[in-house]
Amino acid sequence: MTSRPESRRSFLGKFLSVATAIAASDLPTLARQPLAELASGSTIDSTEFKGKTVFYRLVNKATTKNWQTLPMGELIGKLTHELEGTPYVASTLEIYPDREACSVNLLGLDCVTFVETTLALARMLKKGGRKPEALLSEIALIRYRNGTAGDYSTRLHYMSDWLADNTKKGLVKPLDQLPGAVPFTQKVGFMSTHPASYRRLISQPEQVEKIKKCEEVINGRSLKYVPLNKIAAVEPLLKTGDIVAVCTSQAGLDVVHTGFVYRTADGIAHFIDASSSKSKMKVTLESGPISGSLHWSKNLTGVMFARPLEL
Image (cartoon, rainbow, N blue to C red; front, side):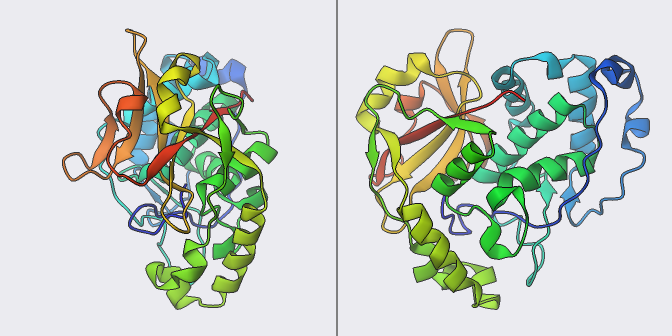
């Protein structure tokens, strides 16, 4: 999650729903239920949840194949493979001009919503959830500071803030002890100094000061990242499902792109992301190792890695 100017990353919305949980012992039975039956009972409207057909297809396949029993990283890998080819679409979270509404869009993903949605799906499946409400509940936990949706300033707009907050919540752990990791000294401030780049800051200018205070907290943290020239050396230590946050030297930003590690059968640690490249514009398994994929801008400096934790 970068400070995501909206062209790069539309973040969340706000609406905390109650998750539907199903005992793990019931999952084999659920897997045999028809899709129409799995879909019954949801009250989420199409404004805040797009792609219900995709959702129920994923739930049906995952429960049929018992993916919920896999380690978290492997489960994330299965889900990223299922989402491969999903169109890249920015600004899907700005569904209302003046209020937050926690939303899901499985028909179009940007780099951050791809990470959030995949992680939320994995957590939901691990808990036995099988309804849109359950996914929205996990999204809200991941997407908002302290897991509580509030106004626009409670979104974790900067990826370094996202990683820190989700570390505190016990959802991920930073891989900041990798060989070659060094202090990350880049400061954030793009949102408060470029409010015209964010439609919600234009419509709600009172949010700018709140965002600025969040930036001050972020800038007070001690973080580490792996410089570009050290990434090849750490690739053998990465696992499928690890989060990749691509750092930048661009003033006011910390991270400009994100995705996951996907290790193929030949042992290569690839980068899978919702690519905004004009030649792709979809969730893409990049060719070659991660160290060879991060070359699209001279401003790229390295990567913060994190590993999703088991429930």
